[in-house]
Amino acid sequence: MYYPFMVADSFPDAKGPDAKGPTDFIGFIGRATEHLAEEGLNVDRATELLLTLNRASSAITYDLEASIHRPQGSSWATFRILNVLWHAGALSSRRVAELADMTKQAVSNLTGPMVDKGLFERAPDPGDGRGVVLSLTPEGERTVRALYVEQHQRERAWVDVLDADEQDTLIRLLTRLVTDRAELAARTRSPQPPGSP
Image (cartoon, rainbow, N blue to C red; front, side):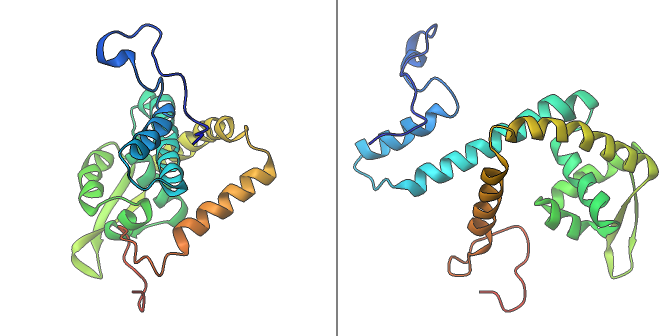
């Protein structure tokens, strides 16, 4: 079977165990699917599709963090929280975690350092005696806006390989992949709406 991401099977300068195998992160997809077939396991497009999706997401996220956020003394996780608060306004830390697709503990761990940096404020949650409400400070808003402008240029560079119709199609397909899941009962970090399975 042909896998479009399969690449040459050796590193030009590698020695020892690394001398044979896929030459890059994406090339691994072809090797993985080929190996599954060699093992006599059921291999279909689902494996290749989800490996490709996962690896594309990881590669882009890593690039954005390494080229934009770390040089600014930030992180991808910090940007996700700032971005949620920027677009949605003041929210409970629980809701921030849901919308940022992070654990409550991860948001909690980042809250102190971001408050110390003056990026957002923390106040008691009137609806939850143990919870807190997070909101951006003016400095936090300036920071997330500047990060977004820089990140958006990088995002454009990533997606410019696709024309507008291809981008629309990809958005539509990915949205469908993650929203039409009632029969799957997929586990997510966000709570399911009332009446969901």
